[in-house]
Image (cartoon, rainbow, N blue to C red; front, side):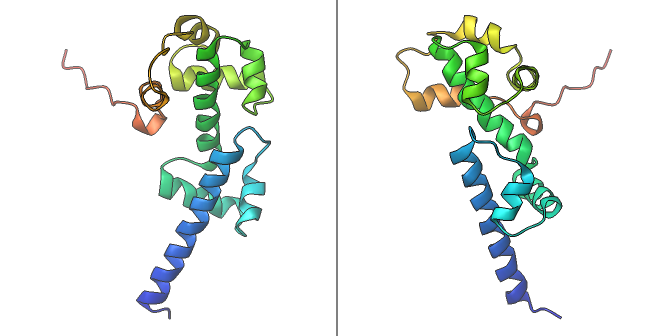
Length: 150
């Protein structure tokens, strides 16, 4: 039987591992990353990492990785000097179709439309403001539609 302090220490150690995974995703989003490699880096199984990461951060590691990639893609598309295909590969995606689909899910418009509409729109704004205003909405953050009473 484990005591409460031991369980608490284990929970803190698990959270530290999850933070290391999240920080690695934030740093290396453009690199080829998969859940198995992330799990090996913190000595966990891929299944356990996915469950624990979702519990701690509200989404699995792959969804978090794709959100980071889409955030960076949005910044590159706003610059307007790269094509959608160039941006796709620059942020670490290997499939233009998957990139476009996920971008559209998170942002609400396809990357080509976003590029055309937003190029130069954030000019003059501090990057911290631009990042906050243009941050993609993850599924768990999307507003829940009110039920229709009609």
